[in-house]
Image (cartoon, rainbow, N blue to C red; front, side):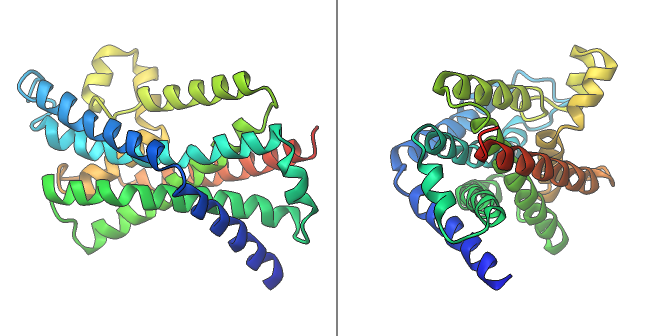
Length: 256
């Protein structure tokens, strides 16, 4: 058991080290997420109905916190997909480590990437929105950990579902944009209820990205309350996605 845990940590450490090699990608992602705050927030701050969004700058800053960890966690999927195409995965499977240690290590590596990337946006929210209290800080950390792990596992499973690069990119993009735009990152639940049929608006409010954004807005003090089931729902989402994605990744490694 100790040997398997050590192997998983080594795989995760390898992925974390490789993260720093993508400095231009990291820079572009940071600029894109900051642009979301600067352009959207400043442009719409005096346009959006303040009945629904009292301060769009703070609303967007907390929403981008969810978007940033989502995007950075998905970066692990591209690399794992490239390894499948180039058959580097055969080398990894030949190493003296159980297959489940490889799967756990890759998911852990993607999780750590997401958490590291999010630190800059946490600082941004502290500066723009407010300083979370102890209970709120724990809720923020818990949400970030689960969201990063779930999105990393999902990205890995999607990217290894086919060896065709174009299909990999298409599947990732469809998943990314579906979860990203059908969320409350850009619009509050009240606006979603006005624009979508009730069942769709309700479903969007309970996606992992929307739930995380809700926790962040409460955690940094933008919202005065949060749904009592938000953390539970995020936990259920994370467990389900981790289990399903790990099984798919194991299946894809076998080439089935």
